[in-house]
Structure formats: structure tokens, C-alpha cells
Length: 219
Image 1 (cartoon, rainbow, N blue to C red):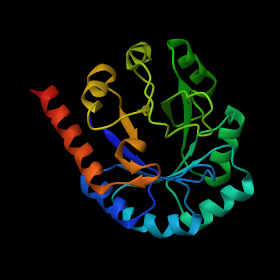
Image 2: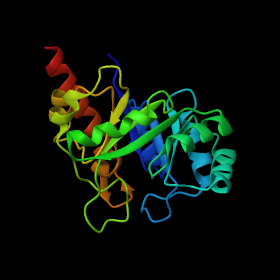
Image 3: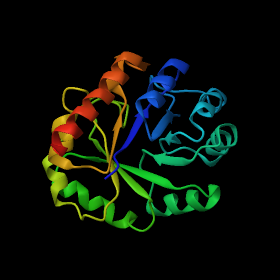
């Protein structure tokens, strides 16, 4: 089974080149002003050109207004929206209709019971992203570099399409793939030398670790 890999929070040509060279299926751009990974829509539109025909460009927002989303979509022409806030199923459906784009709904989880929160979104969101709950005091809904117990994903219905996020890095991706067998993975802080600073060498190292983990499983 193909494994989707999303490198999120891209801001530089070097990081984009490393993501595409490694084989990323998705590249993410964050439009949350409080995040160190925030990027202006016009700059994201410039960067995403390199991904055309190679990877899907994903807009990541947190309870964004229609006006802001109009600007982002107009300047970037993304392939997908990722909603990382408290958006309701109704809001997801509204934005799918407004832009004609698939939507990935992010949900913060820490226990098996949290997975019940996907039910109202089934049939509306095109995909889910499961991220760890933010540490106390964090203003960021994601990109905090913390993981959750991947064992809880074993209880998911096999038909649920999702990406696993939260605290992934080259050192633990093998365990994550072995324990959860996710259809997709999403990494941001795990390939950074400082908050918001993507390191091409760490991106390359992460892809090597993914390949090694998959080779081990195949063997």
C-alpha cells in the first residue's frame, strides 16, 4: 500500500526541494499567524509551483474567515484544505462547496475515546489528520513536537482514511508505522533545526528512515 507523506510548514525553496526530492506526496503551508511556520499567501503561491504534477499542495488554517480563505485560495491555488481548528461538520461542508476542494479535518487526540469525534465528520471530510493534543499553554493546535499513544489507532475502522501527525521524526517513524500502519504521515517540527526552520538534511534523513522502516516490514 502506498504511504502518503506530507511535509508541513514549508517556507523556503530549499525545504521544498528536499521534500519533493524525498518523494513527498503532499506539501503543506501554514496560514496561522501565531505559528512560526506562518507564510504569506503570495509566497506560498510562488513556492507551490514547484510541486505541480509532483505533490498535492495543502492549505492549513485554523478557524479562518471566508475573506482570508478567499485570499489564500486565490493566490495559492491549492489542491486541498486542512482545517486544524474547531470547525464543525457544517463548516467543512460549506468550505468544500465554496472552493470545490477536498478537505482534511484535523482532530487532536490523546485517548481512544477521542477518536469518537470523527463520527459527525464521516462522509463530509475527505480525510482526517490525527494530531496529539497541544501541551498546556501552547497557542498552536499542531506542530508542537509531541506524540500520542499510537496503539489507540488499532481500534479505528479500516475504512477511515487519515494521516498520522504529532511528534514524528526519523528516530520514531519506524515504531509509528509498525504500531499504527497509517495510510499517511505528516511531519513538521521533526524536520526542523529550530521552530519554523526546516532543515533539508533532516528532511532527507526522515525519508531515509521511512524507506528503511518499510523495507524492514517488507522483509
